[in-house]
Image (cartoon, rainbow, N blue to C red):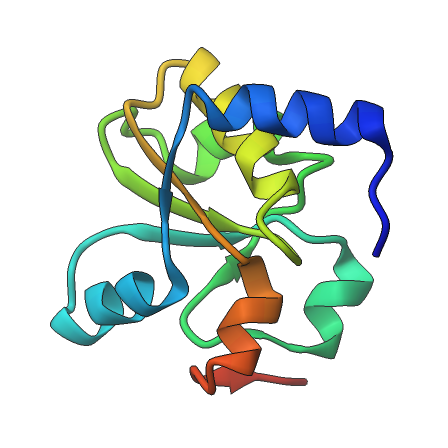
Length: 123
């Protein structure tokens, strides 16, 4: 997908203030049984086609509205992902602005997760 210059500008700006984690590192955390929230911020139709095993869905369009009800602890570790790591970076920055202190964006998103052969779930 070709992203617009304006979109890439705000994503790169957000990435300067957030932390990222690779799909492999995320899977290692899952394998170890680390306590963290693994959240897919993609659109409903993307989620329905397939998702990283162990993730739950809280779309970017509603995450700011619903996150405190689902993850009330602002110190909880949260790993967000989207299709390619762009929208999750924006969502991570928004959660940080809301006071969440341990938010990570998964670089490469679901595309890298799937192409790396990491476990996926489908309906």
